[in-house]
View (cartoon, rainbow, N blue to C red):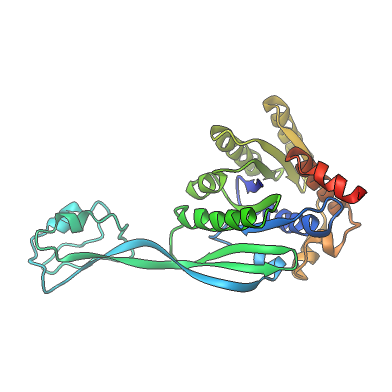
Length: 306
């Protein structure tokens, strides 16, 4: 089983649009293969808006813990205030924890001589196993103001990976989070290939370079795809030059097409909504290149011949 992770150095590059198209193409495109899907962008999980999943399982996700001071046991010694590095415990005479500032490190609890501070686990969100018309989808939601440290990303991906292994699926397609932080590091773990979706803007070029460096640090092979490539040809050429200098394969230059916007409004991957459009034809080429790189293409060709 191979793991494909779709990444972008910044949000808004079209990563999820491509992930939805790949889900459709893996199911019934010209290079079809059985796939499990995962939306690991838990801060803004939008893949379900296109795939319309039916939730089969709902599970709570317990994130960090919150310090709570028992006023009946507290002797107002002030040790907790001194121990807190995040100013989450204002000065007395009575001591209480500011929940918005508490990082759950438990330093105050360890320093309390009266054991008046307990750490309460917090419900941070939920994760789901769902079924879509293109296969199983594992995804999650964080509650408002909850921080994504990468633990929920890891959980979603682990569950999807286990399902893929149990069902002997050839590929796991993961819509990853943007940026280069902890969630991205979590989703890169165990990946066989990262597709970096770049946009031809100054910020897009810079952030594409950062995510490529991040993947290289963890020795994950990288392919690059430029989305809306015809909007700023000069920046597209910069991306092409960067790929040549780094020995990276540029597997596609997807043109700007308002068909993508219309397909999203209709809740369809663009390759299903308008399969003969220029953007769909280029995405199909990208998908075939990915399948070839992951060496699942021979199995596909054998299936089609039979």
